[in-house]
Picture (cartoon, rainbow, N blue to C red):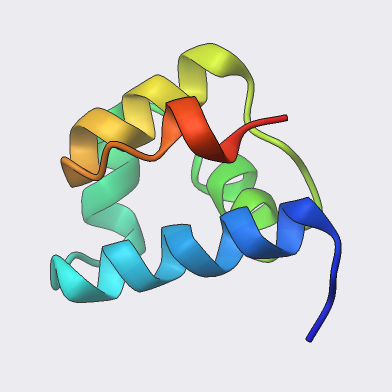
Length: 70
């Protein structure tokens, strides 16, 4: 397992999306975020900005942002 914090955030984001049974398209539409950006986040290639993290959190009702961002 990759020890980088981004990998942990990415895995949690993907898990929460799957748990919510939402497609990537549904999440990006609800969060009003570009699909490619979210794909990069979900694969651990980028950190979300605080605004995007909040939007994803709201779209997934996940409450990820406070403890998961650097």
